[in-house]
Image (tube, helix red, strand yellow):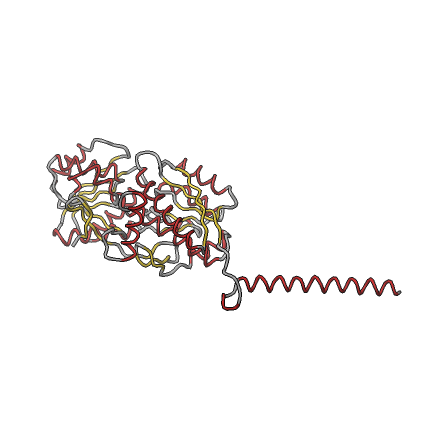
Amino acid sequence: MRKIVNKSFLFISILLLVALTACSGNSKETSGKGDSKDGGQANEAVKAKIGVISYLSGPGAAYGEAITSGFKLAQKEINEKGDVNIELVIEDSAGKQEQALAAAQKLMSDDDIVALLGPTLSTEMNVVGPEADLNGIPIMGTSTTAVGIPQIGDYVFRNSLPEALAIPAAIKKAVDKYGAKKVAILYGNDDVFTKSGFDTMKKQAEKMGLDVLTIETFQKGQSDYNAQLTKIKGLKPDLILCSALYNEGAVIMDQARKMGIDVPFVGGNGFNSPQVLDIAGKASEGLIVATPWFAEKDDPKVKEFVQKFEAAYGKKPDQFAAQAYDALYIYAEALKNAGEADRDAFRDSLANIKDLEGVLGKFSFDKDGDVVMDPIVLIIKDGKFQLFE
């Protein structure tokens, strides 16, 4: 009987010791997460791997180069601050749906990757977004502006201003400035992004009561636009609305000017690149676009970003670099608020981002995961983008 009592006492003592140790451990952990004034230590940085799918090779590689440069600059700054530590795992999509999907699947197979950024084109996001949503991996487009991207699923977001907001602002400003009444529309009919831009242009032209003289199409990689431009020239529009990526868009403007077409072009988001100036040169004069980004904006945050970007890469950041830079800061904020590198916790934290100050301005998501932001209308004048007054 005595042995039984002694054994019971020993067993109870061990249980009490374990309980006390556990309580002591919990107290230590709690104090570690407390304020320094309570004697606790600062939080450890939330560490996370983020997958990036970017257009780094092929005819539109300038988009991907700008985007990844924006990511890397933000990554360096964020990691130096210490609240969050982000590792970027970058894959090239080459602007192709199948390669973007393969890159996404490779990244998603890594359980340590919390979320994805990219891909670059809306046509790529249309195949990658559903896959990410199905696998419960948050994904955010930083340059995908076609209609319906965030509506793909609960895990799909974007911080790039949709063309449904940007294009109408540009058209309205151009019509008001030039008193335009007749327009011609030209667009790439083999790309989700350029097709979406056309749909918005046509809808806005009809809404404003403009006379749409003709609708002309082309395909990605096309080099000769003589037939389309000859027809447009003969109809004498007041404006040409063009939805194209920068390669085709710049060539179209160059050929138009050489044919004697001197009316203003209103472009979609694909024209928001310095490459338009590089390729089209003087032929790009008068191009009107709407964007959330203006490098010459009199704002301390913008000036600091431009200075840091130029120091790192030897050139000014474009819209795509700025959107990528802000995107990683949005992810960092979501990680910090989530407090852990968990996909579901991150997704919920990301959805709740409101009024975050970035280089593009004050940023929030709407209920669909779409950007809430006002566009700026620019014109190419004297060889550079300027505010369109």
